[in-house]
Length: 368
Image 1 (cartoon, rainbow, N blue to C red):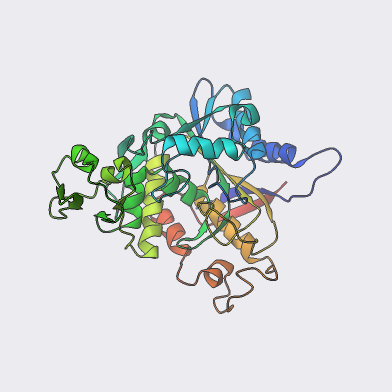
Image 2 (cartoon, rainbow, N blue to C red):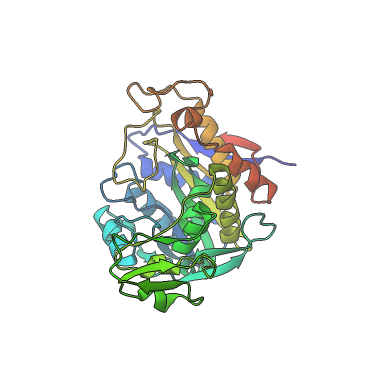
């Protein structure tokens, strides 16, 4: 089997080529222009950054990708889905505020931002997963599924549950609706935090299975009736409906791979990862710790599995930054991500993704 091609460039700039220009040269050399973008709706999946976090990708990089797609005739938009947890991106209005605050506006990027799963995170499409072992129908934000082409622009960093966040994490977890995110994180069903519940009954109105009920002014969920769709999470105005987070990290990684397949199967896709500001935790945190390794470079490929593998290998070749979370952990695994978050196993996601046919862990690294 032929190795997948992963293109790479370092972060050196010159008087004749700055970093945005270098990114443009990278994605063009990697072949993004071979995709037929003419009059095609193109979703650029990106993480806008939780307010307070400063490690997310600058919008300047997104503007480069947008410019190239538009030059190729595409109808492009930036997109992400709402978060499962309570924070600054749990509904479309707050999410747009966060995106604009962090610089992602039509004026800075050249295109509009669309929150793919709607106002409350319930606008989803059920997508069959071919060969899925853990997920039969993925719950994907509708605007992502309405697109003709998907491009992922990823900030490659560490992650406290999956080991690292790269292309597959950005696509699989990122394109899941709120209910989809619950499915990936949980083998169980939601429950009510009675201290937060005000008994408004919105969970009752949204449920098709009569699972929620109210007694003495507080809601509860009958798990014998509940099917775990998670729509009650999206409509609760008090964030009193809580998801279970009881899935093992390995199965979480496998579900992310299967959600990624649901997003990518049957249409053109291309993937870009920037290995910079490699913080130990996800950009969903409202803070970011110092990077665990020095900045590495920019990578691009048609194969998200090979891309993640190449980025992980590149990070593991780097020295540890003094004073970082990684520097303070025992180095017993000889792997920066596992040493930084010992309960994680990032390889499980790539192994499963390869098994279900998303891509290959074998790659040829081509430096430009």
